[in-house]
Length: 179
Image (cartoon, rainbow, N blue to C red):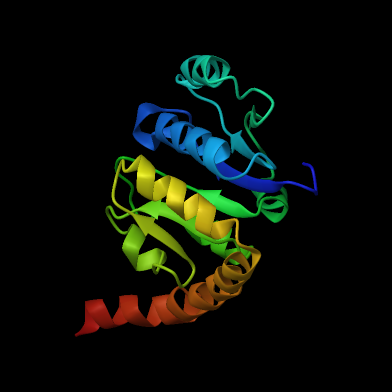
């Protein structure tokens, strides 16, 4: 991946539930309004791939949005991106968010399911109203500011270690069953 561009990235199955169409449309608006020196890289395979690629072509963004297929090494991908983007319609805990935090990535994600327990707004990422392109675009713009991005990046790993440390999780789970 290029080093001189701001890289937004996402990993997941290319299915309707993951709502990549929305992320692509938000990136298009962000790209037009704020930053032509950025790209969106989407890793994954699935039944929506053709539709998403068609959308990218229609928006004339095939030089700025890339599909890199299924990854065996998500860690290597996460190391290379600058901001992790998610916009699922529904999600459990969102393990991929914890993985992004392990690599100190700020996150943009919707206020749904357990996501607000993982992403603390303006601490390790930006939480948006579901399907609000204006908010998602604004979040991308905020994270293009190096100072903000760096602050949220640093906090990402700290919050992961504080809230989701393995030993703490075991203790909390045991407490639930014994009390």
